[in-house]
Image 1 (tube, rainbow, N blue to C red):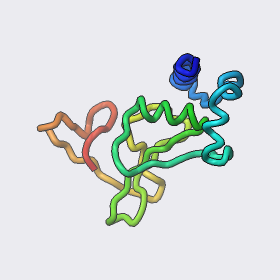
Image 2: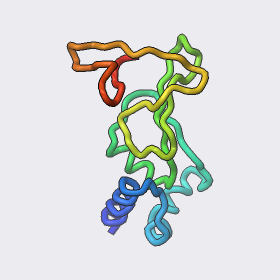
Image 3: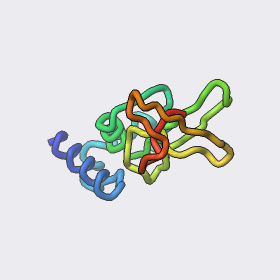
Length: 122
């Protein structure tokens, strides 16, 4: 039954970006959410890559957006951060408002700064 609830919440997250479900949360996920105190509004990760599947499971279990960030020691803090309403994973999001950055093309790994999604290496 839990697997069915998990799959239903992940499907809703992918379709509409919704983290909560009235029935499934009351049956299963509120107890998981309470392990963090029950009042978490958002979480941020930035230690390394995390798979989309893992992110979705964490998002629906804790009923909270999980933002992916990127930073450098040289910048003293975050450089990029995903938006809470962006359910797409495997990206560090856009640059923060006070940051200017440049993408570098690396043809050896098919990373081109002028492609449709502006992928590349910072």
